[in-house]
Amino acid sequence: MKKYILGLVVLLGVTISAQESAPKVKTELGVIRGVHEDGVASFKGIPFAAPPVGKFRWRPPQPVTPWEGELDATEYGSNCAQSGWGGAPGTISEGSSEDCLYLNLWKPTDIETTSKLPVMVWIHGGAFVGGSGSGPGIVGTNFAKQGVILITINYRLGRLGHFAFPALSVEYPEEPKGSYAFMDQIKALQWVQKNVAAFGGDPDNVTIFGFSAGGVSVHSLLTIPYAKGLFHKAISQSGGGRDGVLTGRPIKDENASPFYPVSAETIGINFAKKQGIEGTDAEALSKLRALPVEKIVDSGQETDGEGGPRTYSGPILDGTLVVETAESAYKAGRQTNVPLIIGSNSAEIGGSFVNISKTKEELFLLFGDLKEEAKAAYDPDGKKEFTEIITKFNTDWVWGEPGRFAAKAYAAQGEPAYMYHFGFVPEPMKERMKYGAGHGSEVGYVFNNLNARWGNPETTPEDVKVAEMMNTYWVNFAKNGNPNGDGLPKWPVYNQKDGEILDIQVDGKPVGKPDPRKERLDVIEKGVKIRTKLQTRGI
Image (tube, rainbow, N blue to C red; front, side, top):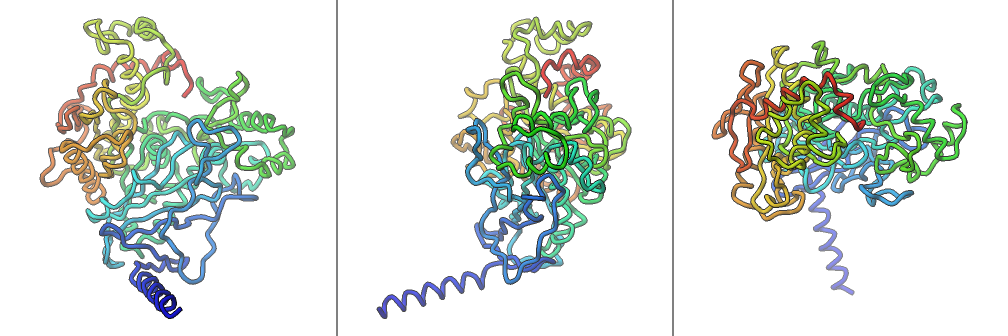
């Protein structure tokens, strides 16, 4: 018995000692207690908004209630509700919940509140229906070790993140509607402005960066008036730069887009009918809010899979929050002007992602008068496989040319824009990734988290070099608005005259040079004028 008591005392002593040595930060809402790990301090599962459940489903994020005592921030909060890729109907992914508006923060240990370190806020990808701000691939340790405060955030997904319905449009008329995911991102950035100084961060030096849907979100935040002033630099990784992959549907306009001719409200009505809910009034909305979350989320299917009407909208151009597409803002110079990094990978995705052509001849015919120019750019000797051509076409159409368009828009405003093309394929992956670096390949290198890369290939010396280089470029940009620094190959500022980019080649060597895709991107730019023919899938 004495041995047991002694052991309990020792255990309690260790627990108390660990809590006393744990990093603690006092914020406007209360004290937050994190943990020391791997040489940095981390704080996980910090609420930046109230749970968006019950009457707050499909409402802007609400304020957090202050807490008493210490908030235990040693574990991640739940991911936002999602079915996961290929998830079974009527279920949600393990570890996901409708109560999900949390962020995570990594910082160097033992810094003062007056340190004013640069802050980076990561917006995850996942086609606006999946993903999260947690996980081994986006741990912020290596950013923190380079003197940056790294924050990752969650935001609502699928129909919880983007939804319109007639009764919603008239409810709380002073509130923005439609894209609750963007409202969550803005709320997280507002939390940063109010609280990051307590962690030693500089609220006047915030960089937003994101991949895929997160990269699209960066473009949206650059053009949403509500987001102005909340950040000071931006990085879009594989986020396009024109209309975005999923934007452009005003709530009520049935003729908003040649790719999305159905209004977001109509799509919401279609979903309600699918759930057996008739009508469009407050009673119908109450029934929608009462649905179990499992009936609302799915893997982002735009229709019921049986040839029926569309039931998921994606981001919504509502006219109050999202007032225009990124493309129209960039053309008119109405974007938030901040230093920009933008780029994509060399072989993002193949198949029928954009175009349902089955042969290269069929694809080139869609270019009309540009047919021979397209052939010369994509298949100069007539010997390339169709699989390679359609992969490069998809990549250029969705990511490459729109990224260049955005870089041009920023250069025209006199803002520094840095464009990259990531083509590195590690030796163990060359057979699987024969046409180049796939969608998301660069993320593990940017975070310098090589053990969490997709496919978990064996780490090579080249991997280590590329990861250290990419992480340092991103850190330098966050600190100074310029990715260049000692020991790094020169990354030229983009301008329309020279068109120079940082080309991270298949062997991992970075070279500042004119864009090697120029001929392809030029013909894609001309093809934008006939985009309804070329883009034969609404994406």
